Figure (spheres, rainbow, N blue to C red):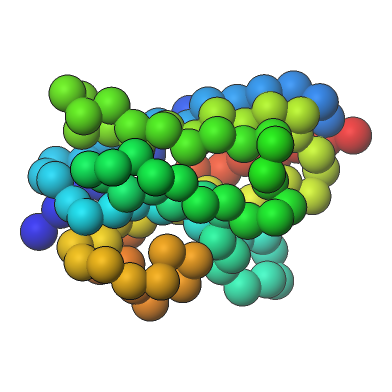
Length: 121
């Protein structure tokens, strides 16, 4: 069992930045961030493989968001810059134990509780 604890959400203005954190209780193969806006399905944002540090991003966030991890702290981060109102959503961190499709939620075994990000224009 891997427990994930997220932090760092909040309310900001368009163009501002936020950094989300996700602390994991154990080591996993890879981790990712997903978001879910009201009335919409959960969407892939970014993913990282724990050992290699290789990353993958949704097209909508490329160049604005950066996913990273701190091996010593077993913590994953999502640096979100140039935020837009359409980024408003609950952001979830997730962990997967084996290789799989990074952009698919079904590949992930554990999920955090979610943290709200609200971007106003």
